[in-house]
Image (cartoon, rainbow, N blue to C red; front, side):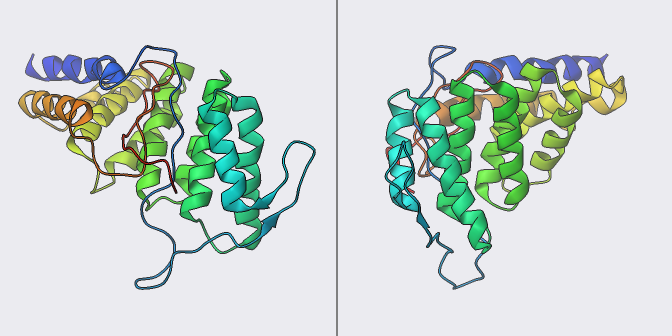
Length: 250
């Protein structure tokens, strides 16, 4: 009976966290910038995108930062269709150099996924978040990408991928308590859909889970974690935005 109660509590967290810290469902918020670790070694300067991006009919080109900034302004103005190709060009320039991921490239990939969400393309957005998480699995950006991936998996009812995203998140030692509580719920949901009820029982007590929910509410509404990402709102319960900060720079 106790295990069943814990299971029901865990599966309810999905709905609870879907609205914590979010605005009106269905609205889109400001864009984000890449954060966290890079592929450079200790003491080495972070990798940058040095290539010039060629001009096109819809954009004058220039440095990767210049193209990114124009895409950021377009996305912030609600012009996701025009913004997404610019972010894709930044990612393509990064990949062409072959020096690993950069903060700017990860920011462009993340914003490209946000643009797909704004265009009501949840499958494309989910695939973009998944690709970002897999390309830089040790960075904090992978946490954000996998959380949004998981929320879109719920919307898409892709429970196999939901289980993979949850496993990747729970393997992180730097996952915040409230994010871990949310991820336990996704893991439980994926197990339920797979018919594996024993695996659906969360690995934390009901008391600890409730405590995590309380801490999550406090952190998201009053003192969000310091990052370079401003708060954004999104599709609703399955893809609520992640982090908040007054800065939009990469």
